Image 1 (cartoon, rainbow, N blue to C red):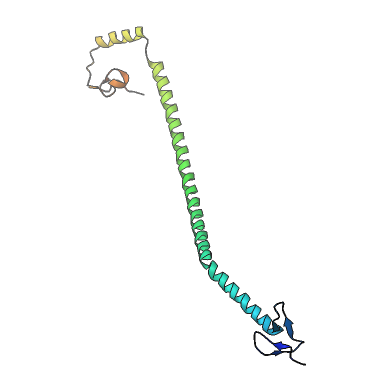
Image 2 (image 1 turned 120 degrees about the horizontal axis):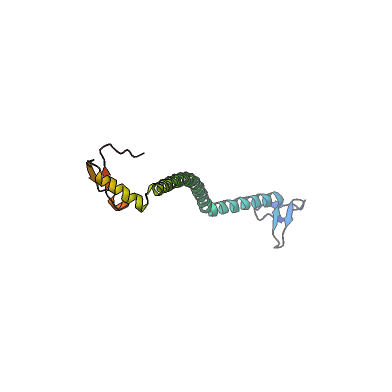
Length: 157
């Protein structure tokens, strides 16, 4: 057949069966137009890849930072759980010590003699001929009187 016009891409004559006409009155071979379109698509993809490369590397860096932060959070959670366990143990020990101290204080209250008994005891002690070995003033502030050692005659139970 007779050539319609030449292809604007390859500059060769186009026959009517292989020619594609576009709105701007340009004529192309179907194969040339498809190859050109594929080339332009690859160029757009390459340009988009280049434009997004820095964004992708930033995304990758952020993902890595997030993974590291997750690991740090997990480690911190373990440390918090261990610290809470220590706090619970310490609170239990304090509670037991307080109960023991309260029981000791209650025992001491039961052992405190009345004024009459104290006066009788003082009279008996002043009459006794036992000499005191030593006087310990460390508990004076706590109890209001020094602690006296009776040289093994008295054993605290």
